[in-house]
Image (cartoon, rainbow, N blue to C red; front, side, top):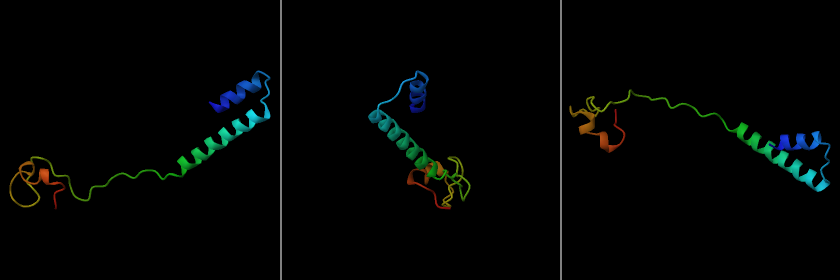
Length: 80
């Protein structure tokens, strides 16, 4: 949007006052700083499961012989 504003002003033959030109340059500097900060953020890594996922109807990994949903499903992560 700032680039479009600057280009429109130049296309129409307008000249910005020194105060307004300083403000526009400040906006460009802030936008560039934000872009660099975003580019510096490392990409997210995908979660890799170490053990196979336990389904609701699978036997519970705790060894009770009951279905997971009736045994450890509400207790949080099942220990394998």
